[in-house]
Image (cartoon, rainbow, N blue to C red):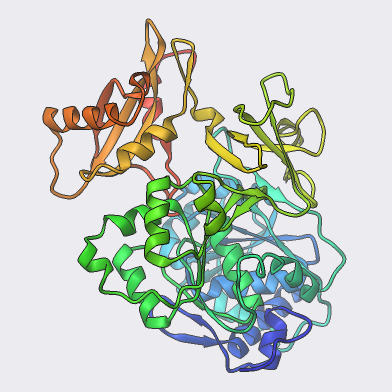
Length: 522
Protein backbone atom coordinates (compact mmCIF):
# COMPACT_ATOMS: atom_id res chain seq x y z
CA UNK A 1 0.00 0.00 0.00
CA UNK A 2 1.47 3.34 -1.05
CA UNK A 3 1.90 5.98 1.60
CA UNK A 4 -0.64 8.75 1.81
CA UNK A 5 0.41 11.31 -0.78
CA UNK A 6 0.99 14.93 0.09
CA UNK A 7 -0.76 17.00 -1.14
CA UNK A 8 -3.97 15.02 -0.92
CA UNK A 9 -6.29 14.50 -3.89
CA UNK A 10 -7.20 12.14 -6.70
CA UNK A 11 -4.42 13.48 -8.92
CA UNK A 12 -1.77 12.89 -6.25
CA UNK A 13 -2.98 9.33 -5.72
CA UNK A 14 -2.92 8.69 -9.47
CA UNK A 15 0.70 9.86 -9.60
CA UNK A 16 1.76 7.89 -6.50
CA UNK A 17 -0.01 4.62 -7.28
CA UNK A 18 -1.40 4.51 -10.84
CA UNK A 19 -2.26 0.78 -10.65
CA UNK A 20 -4.54 1.30 -7.65
CA UNK A 21 -8.18 0.49 -8.50
CA UNK A 22 -10.23 3.69 -8.58
CA UNK A 23 -13.57 2.42 -9.87
CA UNK A 24 -15.42 -0.84 -10.30
CA UNK A 25 -18.14 0.00 -12.80
CA UNK A 26 -21.70 -1.42 -12.66
CA UNK A 27 -20.63 -4.25 -14.99
CA UNK A 28 -17.79 -5.20 -12.64
CA UNK A 29 -14.92 -3.80 -14.74
CA UNK A 30 -11.93 -2.25 -12.95
CA UNK A 31 -10.60 1.22 -13.78
CA UNK A 32 -7.22 2.18 -12.32
CA UNK A 33 -6.30 5.57 -10.94
CA UNK A 34 -3.75 5.89 -13.75
CA UNK A 35 -6.29 5.27 -16.53
CA UNK A 36 -8.90 7.55 -14.96
CA UNK A 37 -6.26 10.24 -14.54
CA UNK A 38 -5.10 10.03 -18.16
CA UNK A 39 -8.65 10.27 -19.50
CA UNK A 40 -9.64 13.20 -17.28
CA UNK A 41 -6.44 14.96 -18.40
CA UNK A 42 -7.37 14.37 -22.05
CA UNK A 43 -10.77 15.92 -21.49
CA UNK A 44 -9.37 18.85 -19.48
CA UNK A 45 -6.90 19.67 -22.23
CA UNK A 46 -9.57 19.34 -24.92
CA UNK A 47 -11.91 21.69 -23.07
CA UNK A 48 -9.17 24.28 -22.61
CA UNK A 49 -8.36 24.05 -26.32
CA UNK A 50 -12.06 24.68 -26.94
CA UNK A 51 -11.73 27.93 -25.01
CA UNK A 52 -13.29 27.06 -21.67
CA UNK A 53 -11.78 28.95 -18.78
CA UNK A 54 -12.14 29.05 -14.96
CA UNK A 55 -15.68 29.98 -13.95
CA UNK A 56 -17.31 28.47 -17.04
CA UNK A 57 -19.82 25.66 -16.66
CA UNK A 58 -20.43 22.25 -18.18
CA UNK A 59 -23.53 20.09 -17.79
CA UNK A 60 -23.76 16.30 -17.49
CA UNK A 61 -26.81 14.27 -18.46
CA UNK A 62 -25.04 11.02 -17.70
CA UNK A 63 -25.95 7.81 -15.89
CA UNK A 64 -23.77 6.13 -13.25
CA UNK A 65 -20.84 5.27 -15.50
CA UNK A 66 -17.11 5.93 -15.39
CA UNK A 67 -17.33 8.83 -17.85
CA UNK A 68 -19.18 10.82 -15.19
CA UNK A 69 -16.05 10.83 -13.03
CA UNK A 70 -13.83 11.67 -16.02
CA UNK A 71 -15.90 14.80 -16.66
CA UNK A 72 -16.19 15.82 -13.01
CA UNK A 73 -12.47 15.37 -12.32
CA UNK A 74 -11.56 17.27 -15.49
CA UNK A 75 -13.77 20.16 -14.37
CA UNK A 76 -12.30 20.09 -10.87
CA UNK A 77 -8.75 20.57 -12.14
CA UNK A 78 -9.34 23.39 -14.64
CA UNK A 79 -11.68 25.60 -12.62
CA UNK A 80 -15.03 24.70 -14.17
CA UNK A 81 -18.44 24.33 -12.55
CA UNK A 82 -19.98 20.97 -13.38
CA UNK A 83 -23.75 20.55 -13.18
CA UNK A 84 -25.23 17.03 -13.13
CA UNK A 85 -28.80 16.86 -14.44
CA UNK A 86 -31.37 14.46 -13.05
CA UNK A 87 -31.99 11.95 -15.84
CA UNK A 88 -35.60 11.51 -14.75
CA UNK A 89 -36.37 15.03 -15.97
CA UNK A 90 -38.30 15.73 -19.16
CA UNK A 91 -36.80 17.51 -22.18
CA UNK A 92 -38.11 21.03 -21.27
CA UNK A 93 -36.67 20.67 -17.76
CA UNK A 94 -33.31 19.56 -19.14
CA UNK A 95 -33.29 22.47 -21.56
CA UNK A 96 -34.04 24.90 -18.73
CA UNK A 97 -31.11 23.71 -16.58
CA UNK A 98 -28.63 23.65 -19.48
CA UNK A 99 -29.60 27.23 -20.30
CA UNK A 100 -29.83 28.46 -16.71
CA UNK A 101 -26.38 27.15 -15.72
CA UNK A 102 -24.94 28.77 -18.88
CA UNK A 103 -23.25 25.53 -19.91
CA UNK A 104 -20.47 25.88 -22.45
CA UNK A 105 -20.62 22.12 -23.10
CA UNK A 106 -23.10 19.32 -22.49
CA UNK A 107 -22.11 15.69 -22.02
CA UNK A 108 -25.00 13.38 -22.77
CA UNK A 109 -25.53 9.67 -22.30
CA UNK A 110 -26.92 7.94 -25.40
CA UNK A 111 -29.13 6.05 -22.96
CA UNK A 112 -31.21 9.24 -22.87
CA UNK A 113 -30.70 10.23 -26.50
CA UNK A 114 -34.33 11.04 -27.25
CA UNK A 115 -34.61 13.45 -24.32
CA UNK A 116 -31.31 15.09 -25.20
CA UNK A 117 -32.25 15.58 -28.86
CA UNK A 118 -35.58 17.13 -27.83
CA UNK A 119 -33.94 19.54 -25.38
CA UNK A 120 -31.08 20.94 -27.46
CA UNK A 121 -32.83 23.50 -29.65
CA UNK A 122 -34.20 25.63 -26.81
CA UNK A 123 -31.31 25.16 -24.37
CA UNK A 124 -29.11 27.98 -25.62
CA UNK A 125 -26.14 25.62 -25.78
CA UNK A 126 -23.50 26.84 -28.28
CA UNK A 127 -23.59 24.91 -31.55
CA UNK A 128 -21.44 21.80 -31.62
CA UNK A 129 -20.98 21.71 -27.85
CA UNK A 130 -23.03 18.57 -27.09
CA UNK A 131 -20.90 15.41 -26.83
CA UNK A 132 -22.55 12.01 -26.74
CA UNK A 133 -21.30 9.04 -24.73
CA UNK A 134 -22.04 5.58 -26.09
CA UNK A 135 -23.49 6.51 -29.47
CA UNK A 136 -24.18 9.31 -31.93
CA UNK A 137 -26.82 12.03 -32.24
CA UNK A 138 -27.31 14.49 -35.14
CA UNK A 139 -25.59 17.80 -34.42
CA UNK A 140 -23.54 16.38 -31.54
CA UNK A 141 -19.92 15.39 -31.25
CA UNK A 142 -18.70 12.00 -30.09
CA UNK A 143 -17.25 11.96 -26.58
CA UNK A 144 -14.40 9.58 -27.40
CA UNK A 145 -13.34 11.75 -30.34
CA UNK A 146 -13.21 14.77 -28.06
CA UNK A 147 -11.02 12.85 -25.61
CA UNK A 148 -8.71 11.73 -28.40
CA UNK A 149 -8.01 15.38 -29.24
CA UNK A 150 -6.52 16.07 -25.81
CA UNK A 151 -3.15 15.06 -24.38
CA UNK A 152 -3.14 12.56 -21.45
CA UNK A 153 -0.72 14.74 -19.47
CA UNK A 154 -1.91 17.23 -16.84
CA UNK A 155 -3.08 20.55 -18.28
CA UNK A 156 -0.59 23.40 -18.05
CA UNK A 157 -3.08 25.71 -16.32
CA UNK A 158 -4.69 24.05 -13.30
CA UNK A 159 -7.29 25.67 -11.05
CA UNK A 160 -9.72 24.16 -8.54
CA UNK A 161 -13.28 23.81 -9.86
CA UNK A 162 -16.58 23.04 -8.14
CA UNK A 163 -19.94 21.34 -8.58
CA UNK A 164 -23.10 23.39 -9.06
CA UNK A 165 -25.99 21.13 -8.08
CA UNK A 166 -29.57 22.15 -8.78
CA UNK A 167 -32.23 21.99 -6.08
CA UNK A 168 -35.21 19.71 -6.59
CA UNK A 169 -37.57 22.59 -7.38
CA UNK A 170 -40.38 21.60 -4.99
CA UNK A 171 -41.48 25.25 -5.01
CA UNK A 172 -40.92 26.69 -8.46
CA UNK A 173 -38.11 25.97 -10.88
CA UNK A 174 -34.90 24.37 -9.58
CA UNK A 175 -31.95 26.65 -8.92
CA UNK A 176 -28.24 25.96 -8.94
CA UNK A 177 -26.32 26.36 -5.67
CA UNK A 178 -23.11 28.10 -6.57
CA UNK A 179 -20.02 28.93 -4.52
CA UNK A 180 -17.32 31.44 -5.29
CA UNK A 181 -14.26 29.81 -6.83
CA UNK A 182 -11.13 30.26 -4.74
CA UNK A 183 -7.72 30.92 -6.24
CA UNK A 184 -6.30 27.55 -5.31
CA UNK A 185 -4.88 24.40 -6.81
CA UNK A 186 -7.02 21.30 -7.40
CA UNK A 187 -5.11 19.62 -4.57
CA UNK A 188 -6.08 22.42 -2.18
CA UNK A 189 -9.69 22.05 -3.31
CA UNK A 190 -9.49 18.31 -2.69
CA UNK A 191 -8.18 18.91 0.82
CA UNK A 192 -11.30 20.94 1.58
CA UNK A 193 -13.48 18.14 0.20
CA UNK A 194 -11.99 15.53 2.54
CA UNK A 195 -12.14 17.66 5.68
CA UNK A 196 -15.01 15.56 7.06
CA UNK A 197 -13.17 12.26 6.56
CA UNK A 198 -11.54 12.01 10.03
CA UNK A 199 -14.87 12.79 11.74
CA UNK A 200 -16.60 10.06 9.70
CA UNK A 201 -13.71 7.61 10.42
CA UNK A 202 -12.73 7.30 6.75
CA UNK A 203 -9.10 6.16 6.47
CA UNK A 204 -6.95 7.74 3.76
CA UNK A 205 -5.54 5.25 1.26
CA UNK A 206 -7.28 2.23 2.72
CA UNK A 207 -10.89 1.29 2.07
CA UNK A 208 -13.73 0.61 -0.34
CA UNK A 209 -16.64 3.00 -0.91
CA UNK A 210 -20.03 1.76 -2.15
CA UNK A 211 -22.00 4.19 -4.34
CA UNK A 212 -25.68 3.88 -3.41
CA UNK A 213 -27.40 6.55 -5.43
CA UNK A 214 -27.50 8.41 -8.72
CA UNK A 215 -24.57 10.73 -9.37
CA UNK A 216 -26.86 13.60 -10.31
CA UNK A 217 -27.67 14.01 -6.58
CA UNK A 218 -25.37 16.01 -4.34
CA UNK A 219 -24.54 13.44 -1.64
CA UNK A 220 -23.60 10.49 -3.91
CA UNK A 221 -21.38 12.64 -6.12
CA UNK A 222 -19.81 14.56 -3.22
CA UNK A 223 -19.00 11.54 -1.06
CA UNK A 224 -17.78 9.36 -3.91
CA UNK A 225 -15.43 12.15 -5.02
CA UNK A 226 -14.26 12.41 -1.42
CA UNK A 227 -13.50 8.68 -1.59
CA UNK A 228 -11.38 9.16 -4.73
CA UNK A 229 -9.53 12.07 -3.14
CA UNK A 230 -8.68 9.72 -0.26
CA UNK A 231 -7.36 7.00 -2.56
CA UNK A 232 -10.25 4.57 -1.99
CA UNK A 233 -11.89 2.22 -4.47
CA UNK A 234 -15.43 3.22 -5.49
CA UNK A 235 -17.86 0.39 -6.23
CA UNK A 236 -20.44 1.79 -8.65
CA UNK A 237 -24.09 0.74 -8.91
CA UNK A 238 -26.66 1.87 -11.46
CA UNK A 239 -29.78 0.83 -9.54
CA UNK A 240 -30.59 -0.02 -5.94
CA UNK A 241 -31.76 -3.37 -4.59
CA UNK A 242 -31.50 -4.23 -0.92
CA UNK A 243 -30.22 -7.79 -1.24
CA UNK A 244 -27.91 -6.91 -4.13
CA UNK A 245 -26.29 -4.21 -1.97
CA UNK A 246 -25.66 -6.73 0.81
CA UNK A 247 -24.03 -8.99 -1.78
CA UNK A 248 -21.75 -6.15 -2.91
CA UNK A 249 -20.77 -5.29 0.67
CA UNK A 250 -19.71 -8.89 1.25
CA UNK A 251 -18.04 -9.41 -2.14
CA UNK A 252 -15.94 -6.22 -2.14
CA UNK A 253 -15.43 -5.94 1.64
CA UNK A 254 -16.94 -2.47 1.57
CA UNK A 255 -15.74 -0.24 4.42
CA UNK A 256 -17.58 3.07 3.91
CA UNK A 257 -20.73 4.30 2.23
CA UNK A 258 -23.46 6.93 2.16
CA UNK A 259 -27.13 5.97 2.33
CA UNK A 260 -30.57 7.43 3.01
CA UNK A 261 -33.21 6.24 5.52
CA UNK A 262 -35.37 4.57 2.86
CA UNK A 263 -32.42 2.23 2.21
CA UNK A 264 -32.47 1.15 5.85
CA UNK A 265 -36.23 0.66 5.64
CA UNK A 266 -35.82 -1.61 2.60
CA UNK A 267 -33.01 -3.58 4.28
CA UNK A 268 -35.18 -4.22 7.32
CA UNK A 269 -38.11 -5.37 5.17
CA UNK A 270 -35.96 -8.27 3.94
CA UNK A 271 -36.66 -11.58 5.67
CA UNK A 272 -34.35 -12.22 8.60
CA UNK A 273 -32.89 -15.30 6.90
CA UNK A 274 -31.90 -13.19 3.87
CA UNK A 275 -30.19 -10.55 6.00
CA UNK A 276 -28.32 -13.23 7.95
CA UNK A 277 -26.83 -14.70 4.76
CA UNK A 278 -24.41 -11.84 4.17
CA UNK A 279 -21.25 -10.79 5.99
CA UNK A 280 -21.28 -7.02 6.52
CA UNK A 281 -18.54 -7.00 9.17
CA UNK A 282 -16.19 -5.05 6.87
CA UNK A 283 -18.30 -1.89 7.28
CA UNK A 284 -16.56 0.79 9.32
CA UNK A 285 -18.60 3.94 8.62
CA UNK A 286 -21.96 4.52 6.95
CA UNK A 287 -23.13 8.11 6.70
CA UNK A 288 -26.83 8.78 6.18
CA UNK A 289 -28.69 11.95 5.35
CA UNK A 290 -31.58 13.41 3.27
CA UNK A 291 -34.36 12.74 5.82
CA UNK A 292 -34.82 11.93 9.50
CA UNK A 293 -34.55 8.22 10.21
CA UNK A 294 -37.31 6.49 12.22
CA UNK A 295 -35.90 5.72 15.66
CA UNK A 296 -36.94 2.04 15.71
CA UNK A 297 -35.33 1.44 12.32
CA UNK A 298 -32.11 3.18 13.28
CA UNK A 299 -31.86 1.16 16.50
CA UNK A 300 -32.37 -2.00 14.44
CA UNK A 301 -29.64 -0.99 11.97
CA UNK A 302 -27.17 -0.21 14.77
CA UNK A 303 -27.97 -3.56 16.40
CA UNK A 304 -27.28 -5.28 13.06
CA UNK A 305 -24.29 -3.33 11.71
CA UNK A 306 -22.84 -2.01 14.94
CA UNK A 307 -22.29 1.62 16.09
CA UNK A 308 -20.96 2.71 12.69
CA UNK A 309 -23.82 4.99 11.53
CA UNK A 310 -23.20 8.72 11.22
CA UNK A 311 -26.14 11.00 10.57
CA UNK A 312 -25.68 14.34 8.87
CA UNK A 313 -28.20 17.17 8.62
CA UNK A 314 -27.88 19.52 5.69
CA UNK A 315 -28.66 19.87 2.02
CA UNK A 316 -27.22 20.93 -1.30
CA UNK A 317 -26.87 24.40 0.22
CA UNK A 318 -24.65 23.27 3.08
CA UNK A 319 -24.39 21.10 6.18
CA UNK A 320 -25.13 21.93 9.77
CA UNK A 321 -25.11 19.00 12.21
CA UNK A 322 -23.66 15.55 12.74
CA UNK A 323 -24.20 12.73 15.22
CA UNK A 324 -22.50 9.35 15.64
CA UNK A 325 -24.22 6.16 16.78
CA UNK A 326 -23.20 6.35 20.42
CA UNK A 327 -24.45 9.94 20.80
CA UNK A 328 -27.64 9.06 18.95
CA UNK A 329 -28.38 6.13 21.27
CA UNK A 330 -28.17 8.60 24.18
CA UNK A 331 -30.39 11.07 22.28
CA UNK A 332 -32.67 8.97 20.05
CA UNK A 333 -34.09 10.96 17.15
CA UNK A 334 -31.50 13.72 17.13
CA UNK A 335 -29.71 14.76 13.94
CA UNK A 336 -26.80 15.95 16.03
CA UNK A 337 -25.04 19.06 17.18
CA UNK A 338 -23.53 21.71 14.93
CA UNK A 339 -20.10 20.83 13.66
CA UNK A 340 -17.17 23.26 14.12
CA UNK A 341 -17.79 26.66 12.58
CA UNK A 342 -21.58 26.23 12.42
CA UNK A 343 -24.21 27.90 14.60
CA UNK A 344 -27.89 26.87 14.74
CA UNK A 345 -30.82 29.11 15.64
CA UNK A 346 -34.48 28.15 16.09
CA UNK A 347 -36.88 31.05 15.51
CA UNK A 348 -40.64 31.62 15.52
CA UNK A 349 -42.71 33.15 12.71
CA UNK A 350 -41.63 36.63 13.83
CA UNK A 351 -37.96 35.60 13.59
CA UNK A 352 -37.49 35.70 17.36
CA UNK A 353 -35.20 33.04 18.81
CA UNK A 354 -37.14 30.53 20.91
CA UNK A 355 -36.09 28.69 24.08
CA UNK A 356 -34.69 25.15 24.11
CA UNK A 357 -37.38 22.55 23.52
CA UNK A 358 -39.59 24.90 21.49
CA UNK A 359 -40.34 24.06 17.87
CA UNK A 360 -39.54 26.69 15.26
CA UNK A 361 -37.87 27.15 11.89
CA UNK A 362 -34.27 25.89 11.79
CA UNK A 363 -31.65 28.38 10.58
CA UNK A 364 -27.91 27.92 10.58
CA UNK A 365 -24.76 29.82 9.73
CA UNK A 366 -21.62 28.13 8.35
CA UNK A 367 -18.00 29.09 7.70
CA UNK A 368 -18.71 29.05 3.94
CA UNK A 369 -21.57 31.52 4.28
CA UNK A 370 -25.15 31.40 3.02
CA UNK A 371 -25.99 29.78 -0.32
CA UNK A 372 -26.06 31.73 -3.55
CA UNK A 373 -28.68 30.55 -6.01
CA UNK A 374 -27.37 31.15 -9.52
CA UNK A 375 -29.38 33.75 -11.46
CA UNK A 376 -31.83 34.25 -8.57
CA UNK A 377 -30.92 36.95 -6.07
CA UNK A 378 -34.45 36.97 -4.67
CA UNK A 379 -34.37 33.27 -3.79
CA UNK A 380 -30.92 33.79 -2.25
CA UNK A 381 -32.41 36.52 -0.02
CA UNK A 382 -35.57 34.54 0.77
CA UNK A 383 -33.75 31.83 2.76
CA UNK A 384 -31.91 34.33 4.97
CA UNK A 385 -32.86 35.28 8.50
CA UNK A 386 -33.36 39.05 8.31
CA UNK A 387 -30.50 39.52 5.83
CA UNK A 388 -28.03 37.87 8.23
CA UNK A 389 -25.68 35.00 7.39
CA UNK A 390 -28.18 32.51 8.85
CA UNK A 391 -30.20 30.55 6.29
CA UNK A 392 -32.84 27.82 6.30
CA UNK A 393 -33.52 24.65 4.34
CA UNK A 394 -37.19 24.88 5.27
CA UNK A 395 -37.23 22.45 8.20
CA UNK A 396 -38.90 22.86 11.57
CA UNK A 397 -37.33 21.52 14.72
CA UNK A 398 -36.01 22.28 18.18
CA UNK A 399 -32.76 22.17 20.14
CA UNK A 400 -32.65 20.48 23.54
CA UNK A 401 -30.85 21.74 26.63
CA UNK A 402 -27.64 19.98 25.55
CA UNK A 403 -27.60 21.61 22.11
CA UNK A 404 -28.81 18.60 20.10
CA UNK A 405 -31.05 19.36 17.13
CA UNK A 406 -34.28 17.43 16.53
CA UNK A 407 -36.27 17.86 13.32
CA UNK A 408 -40.05 17.53 13.30
CA UNK A 409 -40.89 18.08 9.61
CA UNK A 410 -40.51 20.33 6.61
CA UNK A 411 -42.35 23.61 7.10
CA UNK A 412 -44.08 23.14 3.73
CA UNK A 413 -45.47 19.76 4.90
CA UNK A 414 -46.95 21.08 8.15
CA UNK A 415 -50.68 20.32 8.46
CA UNK A 416 -52.87 22.80 10.32
CA UNK A 417 -56.09 21.08 11.40
CA UNK A 418 -58.50 22.89 13.69
CA UNK A 419 -55.72 25.23 14.78
CA UNK A 420 -53.41 22.36 15.76
CA UNK A 421 -50.00 21.85 14.11
CA UNK A 422 -49.49 18.26 12.94
CA UNK A 423 -46.19 16.96 11.60
CA UNK A 424 -46.82 14.20 9.02
CA UNK A 425 -43.36 12.67 9.24
CA UNK A 426 -44.11 11.36 12.74
CA UNK A 427 -47.19 9.54 11.42
CA UNK A 428 -45.35 8.24 8.35
CA UNK A 429 -42.68 6.73 10.58
CA UNK A 430 -45.31 4.93 12.67
CA UNK A 431 -47.17 3.57 9.63
CA UNK A 432 -43.97 2.41 7.95
CA UNK A 433 -43.27 0.12 10.91
CA UNK A 434 -46.43 -1.91 10.29
CA UNK A 435 -45.49 -5.29 8.80
CA UNK A 436 -47.99 -4.90 5.95
CA UNK A 437 -46.75 -1.41 4.95
CA UNK A 438 -43.86 -1.05 2.51
CA UNK A 439 -44.01 2.76 2.31
CA UNK A 440 -46.28 5.56 3.54
CA UNK A 441 -47.05 9.21 2.83
CA UNK A 442 -49.18 11.49 5.00
CA UNK A 443 -50.34 15.01 4.13
CA UNK A 444 -53.22 17.44 4.56
CA UNK A 445 -56.30 17.55 2.33
CA UNK A 446 -59.27 19.99 2.44
CA UNK A 447 -61.78 19.79 5.26
CA UNK A 448 -64.64 22.30 5.37
CA UNK A 449 -64.81 22.35 9.17
CA UNK A 450 -61.19 21.92 10.25
CA UNK A 451 -59.38 23.49 7.30
CA UNK A 452 -57.32 20.37 6.70
CA UNK A 453 -57.53 16.70 7.59
CA UNK A 454 -54.93 13.96 7.39
CA UNK A 455 -54.77 11.65 4.39
CA UNK A 456 -52.51 8.57 4.32
CA UNK A 457 -51.40 6.99 1.05
CA UNK A 458 -50.01 3.50 1.56
CA UNK A 459 -47.85 1.23 -0.57
CA UNK A 460 -48.51 -2.24 0.88
CA UNK A 461 -45.87 -4.92 0.95
CA UNK A 462 -45.93 -7.44 -1.87
CA UNK A 463 -48.98 -9.75 -1.96
CA UNK A 464 -50.93 -7.64 0.56
CA UNK A 465 -54.21 -6.38 -0.93
CA UNK A 466 -55.96 -3.17 0.01
CA UNK A 467 -59.19 -3.70 1.89
CA UNK A 468 -61.41 -2.10 4.53
CA UNK A 469 -59.94 -4.63 6.96
CA UNK A 470 -56.40 -3.40 6.24
CA UNK A 471 -57.51 0.19 6.82
CA UNK A 472 -59.11 -0.79 10.14
CA UNK A 473 -55.89 -2.56 11.10
CA UNK A 474 -53.77 0.51 10.32
CA UNK A 475 -56.12 2.83 12.22
CA UNK A 476 -55.93 0.55 15.27
CA UNK A 477 -52.12 0.40 14.93
CA UNK A 478 -51.93 4.21 14.92
CA UNK A 479 -54.37 4.49 17.84
CA UNK A 480 -51.98 2.49 20.02
CA UNK A 481 -49.06 4.78 19.17
CA UNK A 482 -50.40 8.26 18.36
CA UNK A 483 -52.77 10.85 19.76
CA UNK A 484 -56.23 10.68 18.24
CA UNK A 485 -55.83 13.93 16.29
CA UNK A 486 -52.76 12.46 14.52
CA UNK A 487 -54.59 9.44 13.10
CA UNK A 488 -55.30 9.84 9.36
CA UNK A 489 -58.99 10.29 8.58
CA UNK A 490 -58.75 8.35 5.32
CA UNK A 491 -56.42 5.91 3.57
CA UNK A 492 -55.66 5.39 -0.11
CA UNK A 493 -53.48 2.65 -1.59
CA UNK A 494 -51.05 2.72 -4.51
CA UNK A 495 -48.72 0.24 -6.17
CA UNK A 496 -45.74 2.54 -5.67
CA UNK A 497 -45.17 5.90 -4.01
CA UNK A 498 -43.36 8.56 -6.08
CA UNK A 499 -39.86 8.52 -4.69
CA UNK A 500 -36.75 9.69 -6.44
CA UNK A 501 -33.71 7.42 -6.66
CA UNK A 502 -32.21 9.23 -3.66
CA UNK A 503 -35.22 8.19 -1.57
CA UNK A 504 -36.90 11.60 -1.58
CA UNK A 505 -40.69 11.38 -1.47
CA UNK A 506 -42.34 13.67 -4.02
CA UNK A 507 -45.34 14.31 -1.82
CA UNK A 508 -46.60 17.21 -3.91
CA UNK A 509 -47.47 14.78 -6.72
CA UNK A 510 -49.87 13.07 -4.32
CA UNK A 511 -51.10 16.12 -2.45
CA UNK A 512 -51.96 18.36 -5.39
CA UNK A 513 -54.65 15.95 -6.64
CA UNK A 514 -56.78 16.73 -3.58
CA UNK A 515 -56.34 20.51 -3.85
CA UNK A 516 -57.25 20.93 -7.52
CA UNK A 517 -59.52 23.88 -8.24
CA UNK A 518 -58.78 25.63 -4.95
CA UNK A 519 -57.18 29.02 -4.52
CA UNK A 520 -55.09 27.94 -1.57
CA UNK A 521 -52.99 24.88 -0.74
CA UNK A 522 -53.39 24.96 3.05
